[in-house]
Image 1 (cartoon, helix red, strand yellow):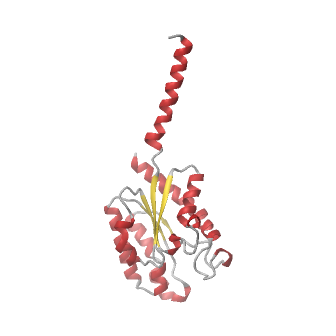
Image 2: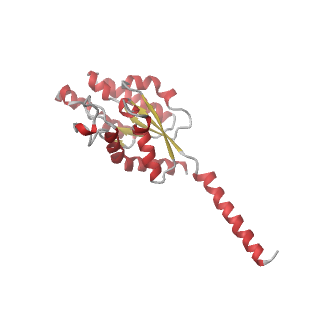
Length: 216
């Protein structure tokens, strides 16, 4: 084989080897599940406008190889989430974005019970060795100061107990801004979801980084 032919052979084989490496190591998408209520599900929005869909698009635009599955159920409480956590988060899930509690607060459910349910969800995911990114909710003002004092600290306390990352308030930058909400004044519209995604993308990227480091 001539020198030129040998060089060409080397280049081709090297290119093939480089092409094969990402397929084996890097091309396996990280599987995230967005587990929550209507805020996660995308109440009255097109599927492409939901939080999980817009987050996946933002992460992919940043070069992240990730799939974000929507396991949000409108109207779900922490009790409802606990009852479905096993079958809503399938085996092979690499991480869960957990957002529940808004409906508990709207219904005036005991903060102690909400915390107990969220604790059980986190314990179950820890048992399954699935990392969690916890998203907090604040009690609505009409529930009163006493309720808020008991409800609002739940998420920080649980994040510390389970050593999971916490985004304190899912509707930060959206709550009370009518142009970012549906006519009900509670749920985000597509633009509102975009704000939520913009604010949470960097924390979620850090979460993905931790998942990747854990898998090494």
